[in-house]
Image 1 (cartoon, rainbow, N blue to C red):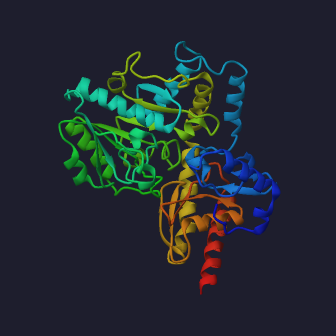
Image 2 (tube, rainbow, N blue to C red):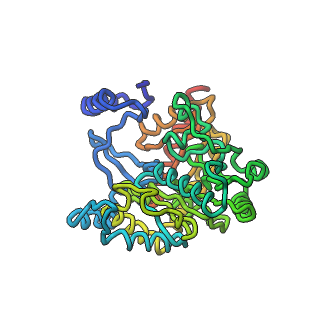
Image 3 (cartoon, rainbow, N blue to C red):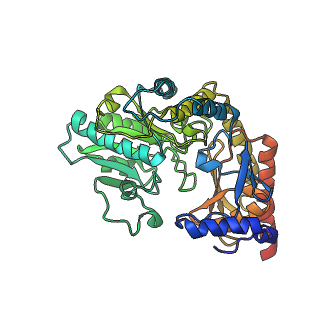
Length: 418
């Protein structure tokens, strides 16, 4: 590990060092975590093994939209743990039907295909789109293509990295699966040019999270919707990070009053308690799936379904979506003065922001390390960008405190280089 720019006592803690050294010794090095060892959490705050508290402003990449250990979600999980946790889909369970019914209603769709992780949901969407292309659209066998956007992040399976443009995720894992066409994000002309009679679907994130909270040009999603309708192509919206309240609406597509043919959901659907994902679509789309053509031992298990249903109930009133909208506006207002003062640009929608730090001052990683030293946890991406995505339940005073720490770090580094 590199030496982080944080107070020396954090690194000097024998408890912290012991946990980090053990984890580094016995786990594959597919992550480079900040040197904090979390032991407990509640709401928007976490506590490390030495009793230090930190404000969680990553929220599990939006898996913790409702905070750590939300009482209603913990209660739903606890009640179900005392009854039955797994049956497999070889049998029915009493939680699956109510969960699927409520999630379909929330999305304005007909059917739900439950899975576990976000990558599984994207893989499921790809399979469904291809099968729909052959059975409904009439694409010749094995000729279907799917159009995707550059700088996408849909997961890290071998299929998904085949159309990734991120070298770290892709390099060294070939050969790659054919059948995908990559165009620039937000470029309607390029998208239209890539679509042909063999195109089954367009797969997009309405907002690209891993890329740094990249928001498409106004009207782009509406143009995608029209293109898909005109060309008999499915619009698959990957709302794994952007959905379920994060952007101030239930789904990010709602900002342009757009309804895709399929929502791909995950992360927050499990409330930060269990992995829950799903594809949600019309019956004429998901109807192409039949017994044996797709499955999952754990997908739709009663524990996951009980928690997922509780998540849907939380979103039912719209209060959390409105809170994300209101606090997101507050976040933007407090970040904007930093542009030109150590920050090059800010992109935000709801309670989700990508902040480009001036690389002449420090990298995104270094900024995160310094923020950790002040009690704020978040994550960098693509070198100089820091993502801010605190739980929607964060208190406004804590949000203000976080932006104060952000400003303080920038001021300290600017002073040190003068």
